[in-house]
Amino acid sequence: MKRHLNTLFVTTQGTYLFKDGETLALKVEDTVKLRLPIHTLEGVVCFGQVSASPFLLGHCAAHGVSVSFLTEHGRFLASVQGPTSGNVLLRRRQYRLADDPAASAALARFFLSGKLANARAVLRRALRDHGGKIEAEAVGQAIDRLSQHLDRLRTDMALDAARGMEGDAAHAYYGVFDHLIVAGKGDFAFAGRNRRPPLDPVNCLLSFLYVLLAHDVRSALETTGLDPAVGFLHRDRPGRPGLALDLMEEFRPFFADRLALTLMNLGKVKGKGFKRLESGAVVMDDATRKEVLMAYQERKQDVVEHPFLREKMPIGLLFHTQALLFARHLRGDLDGYPPYLWK
Amino acid sequence: MYAEDELLSISALQHLLFCRRQCALIHIERVWAENAFTVRGGILHEKAHEQGYASRDGVRVARAVPLRSMELGLSGVADVVEFHEGRDGEIVFPVEYKLGQPKADACDTVQLCAQALCLEEMLSRPIEAGAIFYGRTRRRLAVAFDAALREATRAACDDLHAFIRAGVTPKARYDARCRSCSLEATCLPRACGGKRSARAYLRQAIEEP
Image 1 (tube, rainbow over the protein chains, first blue to last red):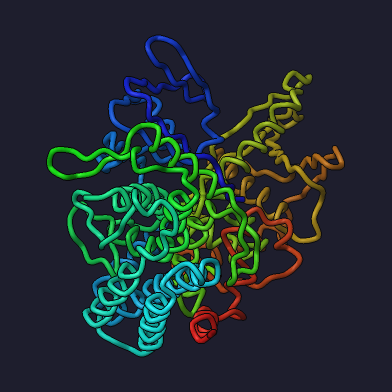
Image 2: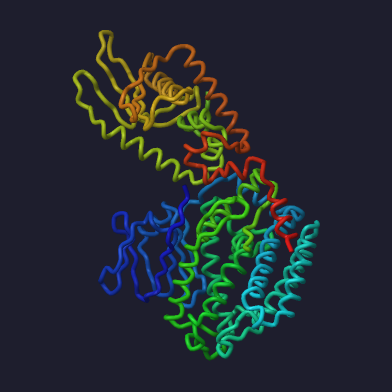
């Protein structure tokens, strides 16, 4: 039985990770600060100047524990992968479908449907919770726009058309995202999405959460035996985890975006926790990053009922479940890919 | 005769006889194969070792014995092979360790017989009987490798090779076996049995006002 396990985030600079028997040991300045049995871990994410012994990396790979290295500010650097796991037939099927434009478009529509339905659910929830405080009319219009696109996604269309709709839907959604920030308006204003680099605290927060999400989704795909690099909505680009980005789509709104909103609206992150660099790029300070990481981990423990499987599971296990359902669709067990739909 | 790289795992026979989808998930899909294998293997070896009756008079006991048969196209590891002193020379006697209790179907006896056929081929000696030790009952069940069991084992091997070559994972069907199956969370028998439609689910969710 697949269990939802912990991800270890290492943010203390100068930390050295090594294998000690069956445990992962963590050393800071010659003092061992922590020992964790490796079988209790799902992943290790290292920020900045953190190093690890090759034996630990090998042991993690053998136990399916993903290890990623990020810059201090959360930009992805590298991840360590063991022997390719899983099913060669599954991967060949993935590649064949990715080479087939019609099949790719059909799969992309499943991912997009999940994304748009969940984005719509986030906006609806905001109306329900803060209807009096926010610009309900603008949000309502965005909801209608998403609904129109969801309807159109039910008919066959070429990949470019689907991608065009995604662009328009994202425009509608992010266009009203600022209305969903109901507290800390002075600190947090959102005028549109920018990523490379993020130019304001909201984008900084969103980008950071998306990086964490990408790490988790990617390792779920690898565990399932899928190739995270070969996507359907996101086409091949060297170095880009296309399928991880595809599968992430349904999780962005209800998981990452709502977490960002909660952190801002409840005042758990503050404007002064973000720093503007000379170039205008915005980064978060250590305390804020820690707060976000903790909130991310806690949110993964929340139990939800999967509407397709009709089973309860922690959100952290949803990544694996969705990767598995996608694999089962590719192998012909399901007549489509059922995205996780948040209510 | 099979080539070396065509050999399949002896344990796959048992999976095939228990549930064809389980067999496909483990041996074709390789989904979380590491989990299934390590858990199974770990438990087996633990059991085989904890018995520790290695020094009985007149019996040599070999543990974790690697086996193969080019004729059946199988390879694997026998928990224990005993070599008894007999009047006409040594008698080879394979013993398999199982956690549970004797089962109604032929899974276990076929697996043991396959081990015996491997040993016959490797040692060029006839092997007439073996035993399965069941942890639940703490008793040995004696198994005679008669013509009917040998025939059933050969047929299962042919079936297994054709099944793996075809590479098609059968649809799931939820039944009583699923409750004892460690792969249920991967197999998703209720969702993947053809009764639930992902398209209908999505359509319904999108239409909702």
